[in-house]
Amino acid sequence: MSEALLDIRNLELRYGAAVAVRDISLQVHPGQLVAVIGNNGAGKSSMVRGATGLVRPSGGQVIFRGEDTTRLPANKKVARGLVMVPEGRLLFPGQTVEDNLILGAYVHGGIKTPRSKATLQRVLELFPRLRERLHQQAGSMSGGEQQMLAIARGLMAEPELLVIDELSLGLAPKIVDQLIGVLADLNRTGLTILLVEQLASYALAIAHTAYVVANGRISHHGPSAELARDPEVMEAFLGRKKTAA
Ligand SMILES: Nc1ncnc2c1ncn2[C@@H]1O[C@H](COP(=O)(O)OP(=O)(O)O)[C@@H](O)[C@H]1O
Ligand SMILES: [Mg+2]
Image 1 (cartoon, protein in one colour):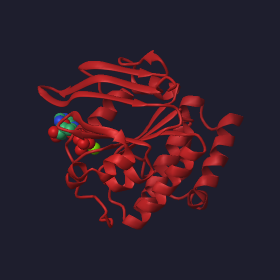
Image 2 (cartoon, rainbow, N blue to C red):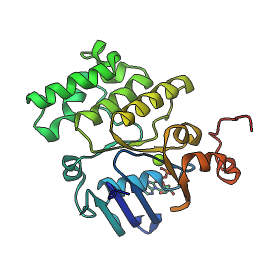
Image 3 (cartoon, rainbow, N blue to C red):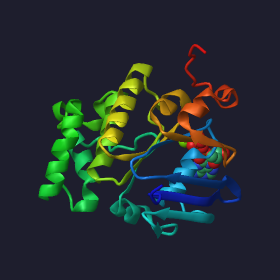
């Protein structure tokens, strides 16, 4: 197989004395859609913060595009193509949709470059709702539209790898289905995605491979279809969809 785009090796992360990530190793290869599932408090977001440089890991390595980026700050990682859509979206609610998108393009010199203008047009084709609402305040939109904006803002940074933390947070199932469809489409057109999601069944439905995080470690890892059939894995998640056996 090709070299991993993201290779997390024995990651450990602490908040003061509390260990949130004990030992996580995980690989994402170019073109893959990889899911990370696990219950609330398992350490998924902490793993993402360690990988993206928002929190400095206390142990292990984060190799991105063959380079040891363990100690690089988040903005430098974004410039290299490691882009995150954070849990809870973290939009600027008082700013317009357009301004939020422009902020996403910041690492590439803002929206004035021809390249960023072209990216904006592509992103707005993907999310026509955002085009209609370009001059509306981000905080005045529905939760689903705000999640679209958070993904769109991430795309403005032209990711090599898009990491999405809790796509489904606070959204109705119908909206989650819609956004899951958008991610599957983006992946089919070549975008590599790491999807961190508490609602396991949604993530497993579109991912190639998946990792289960429990107590700061990987408890299971394998092809999504296999994990989705594993009763031990599925019983651990309240978010599972009941499917006929
Ligand atoms: N900023 C923080 N400060 C201290 N402890 C934290 C912080 N964020 C998360 N934790 C703790 O780290 C553990 C893992 O949390 P988190 O990574 O948010 O899990 P998940 O994303 O899987 O729900 C939990 O015990 C949580 O209480
Ligand atoms: Mg989380």
